[in-house]
Length: 76
Image 1 (cartoon, rainbow, N blue to C red):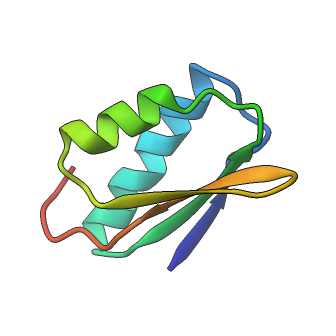
Image 2: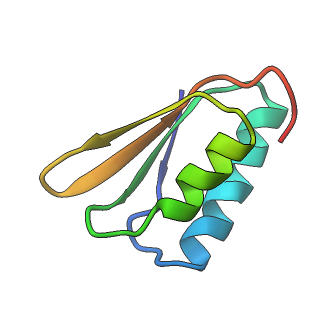
């Protein structure tokens, strides 16, 4: 599983970085964990993952959120 710390980014750069790293993971058929700031707005990320029909899970932690994306068989 690839781990990406995106906690220093805010939208729109957060979304751009998320898609960039997701594309690399898809190319290598890997799953990933994205760490984002607790107060980050991830609505665009959730909407994108749903639209792409990808399986994901979001966990809330005291200091941050984690977005887990499962291994992808198809390209993004």
